[in-house]
Length: 128
Image (cartoon, rainbow, N blue to C red):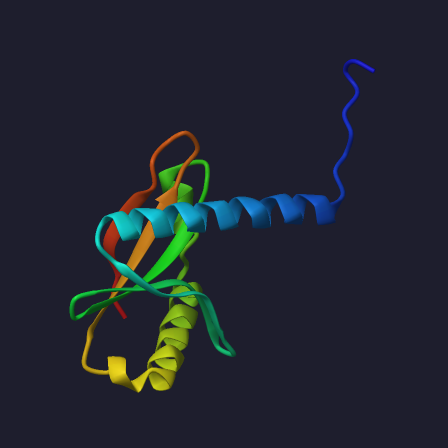
């Protein structure tokens, strides 16, 4: 059956994308641990949004959005203003549940995972 392509179901495509995203998050966690960060939460879900990774290093609490894309430009543009607002609201919910973290400095980072390249950590990717 050379030359014939099989069309994948939408469910199959979603599963593949989900698995690829999970692998990207695992790579991001490994990178952060190697840099000395302590992972506080992964896939934190609040009614107002979701946080991919929450990590801590010293007095700094870092909220990290992980993007897996084909190129850097599309990865960075995928973090839209709307998504940033949702991440900030989810961070507020996280902080409300973890009041003992209240005196920490907070930073918003991104980790971009591109094909055949090591993950790239972009510190202070945006500010509220």
